[in-house]
Image (cartoon, rainbow, N blue to C red; front, side, top):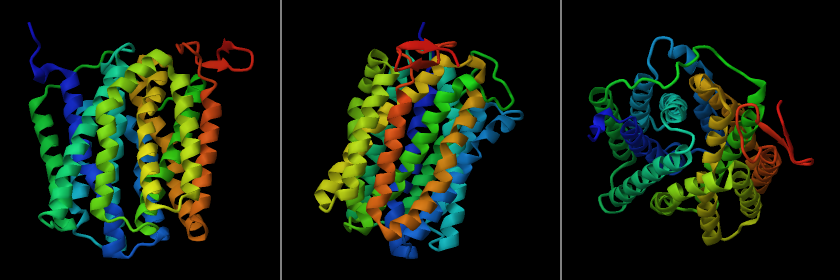
Length: 396
């Protein structure tokens, strides 16, 4: 007998993967043009805004305290609603401090949701199916993004909707989907009872390092690669949207296949390939002088994102199943230690040399590549690290 869709946890994960990009990715697509055209932002203000955006991510460790009074599933749905609210209000506050405020509201919902969704996914999916299913969820999110970016392009080019209306539609849709999820699905039980305290374990050290470097590196792409397209090359909102369409078309077509490849190659090989590619991309960003080449780099950069699934599957293999909820919040905090500092610090560097910002990105990619060599071929509890010089795995 087939299980009804409302009683399947993976269906809830699918809807969550749809709701988040409806709000957050449209916010991302419109933000740079909005802050430049309506609020007169320079590299300094955009750096401050992006640093403020990462503060809730830095505080994601507090997830474990919220879970003392709320179920993880309930908290995930509430966080989605908060994300939608923050996006919906963005267009109503086209000032420096107004944008800082709406960004913090949006970001609080986004980061708590992402932390809890990661925990739920790793609890509800088995180790064998996780790479492919996480890839499938990424593909579903990308297909959603592809659709909403197409709709956004039509709204901008054909109907000439204002920034305010576009933000309102995107945030409102996310709010409605969150309400539906809260009412339509029962509370699904966790496979393992989760610890309700902060947990830091020495044997998770490599995972923490990879997560930290990922946060620093990703911020340079999210903040400054997009800003480069607008400030240096004069890309319009509709042209940036078309680039996002290309990016998410790739993820839609290949993300699940990349998950299968991660399962076949192993985490170390997958991440090494990603980091080698990113070194080249960041160096090219520093040197690029042609708008078309810059657009190509932007697409190539995004193509590597799906391989980051390997960090989560590595952790799933080495972790105590009871640590998922606590560790998800802790890992998001670690991810955002650098993310809080990097945008503001490099925003000032940007005023001196935009190329230097991307050389920093290449440096973070080199460190990531070195760290990835410590992942063993077959990670497991008690087998968290490998010695690449001797080829002998050992326990921390």
